[in-house]
Length: 121
Image (cartoon, rainbow, N blue to C red; front, side, top):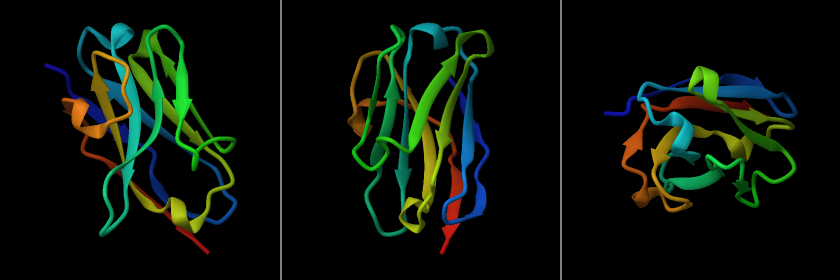
């Protein structure tokens, strides 16, 4: 059973940076596909970035050039570095794990509880 725990969210100002972390409790982190999603109030959950076990990464257009997804297999931890944050980045950010490469949230069986990111203007 995989458990995911996110941390690192907070209240920041426009233009600030923030790094989210997600600790994966199971033995399969090294081989799992890991992703970040976010959900703003009244909006659907949306894909942010994904990291595959072979080193591949892919970003949503809103994240390209500003966010960096990375993973530390030794620590079973996934990261999301966010730069030049904007008010529209305000959302609950979730970490998710699955066994195959996908950006669709309904194909991720394992989820964390989320960490709130609020960007003030």
